[in-house]
Image (cartoon, one colour):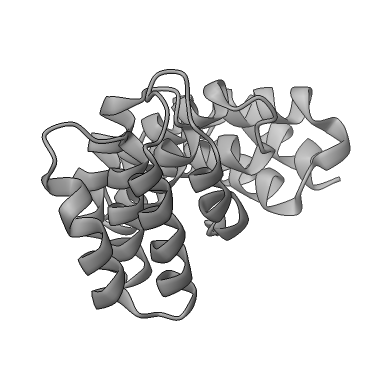
Length: 193
């Protein structure tokens, strides 16, 4: 259900954010090499390139972001989370950091943290993807917070009527059925009609 945002991930190295400042030439070169190694699945080489950049007292948040990607690509989500947290701590506007932190937290079944990170990414992005709000709703549902999930899904259906996906309605039906009551059963039926 969660989609890996590879295109966004790789383009993050091209942007220098206002919060994080400008990338140094050595950081730009290191990130470019890291991206190449990630594409080639040469994770040890990617880590080696990033190591001296990370050892500096001050470095750009994208360096932490790419270190997190190395762990995430190896499906070591527990190792990736602290690096993503450092990246968004250094630049709270780095929405791709929030998206990937959310994905890692979701894979670790830390649903509330995942939901909050998806919501943050959605709020920060200039052109947010509707599926990020859906993913936040799904995470809240998994965290046994159906009322919060329902709120997000209802806003999603209102804000993106032309992009409605069947899975959005399916989750809303599950929530209505879970909440019970005659009114919710009627609302669930409306979603499947």
